[in-house]
Image (cartoon, rainbow, N blue to C red):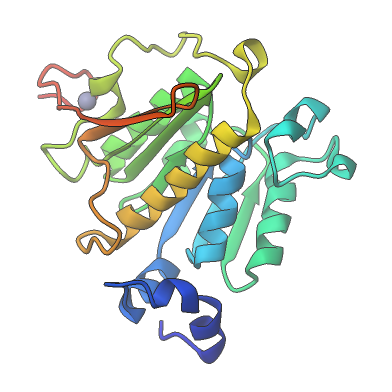
Length: 256
Ligand SMILES: [Zn+2]
């Protein structure tokens, strides 16, 4: 899909970056992303993907906007209280960039919907804080040869990685790295341990960056992606580190 004059103007500041071509922008326009979770991570993730020209974005969340969300979930305003999150976030993203196709699904990702939506080539951004959903995304991305971009944030810290275990036999999956997390695991929920808005802003923005990287593979105009790596972030000590992570041959999801 060739870029028109409006596209060349809208994306001018990213097109002049060293190593970035119009072909990269056209590839972004053809990319499909499922963002699971329209909360603290999903908000900057969705808005930056739409702004960057990622062509097809589905945003999924079964919650409604609550007052406690508004310290970090920047897709929503005070008069959105009680509204469905996915539809409300989608409306905001469409205002930023009407040329991208944004689909809102005001529902949770269960097995049936994951089976229906997740397919080969899709990038699924996991912006939830539910272990069960996270493991479901990992399982279906592996089975269906989709890419999973994972982000997590709580308190003043976060993590980030990507998994392509369904298409790259050397790639670990989420369970390779976090083998002890089960569907009944209680991840640190923001409602229990707290969260500061800029922390989800940092991790959600880095997730958007990583989705853009994954969509442009095999080219890497923005540096190497996070597949096979885990980025750790701790704001209290201004600490950021990326460690190498490996596939587990005995992984119940991607091993064997
Ligand atoms: Zn695995």
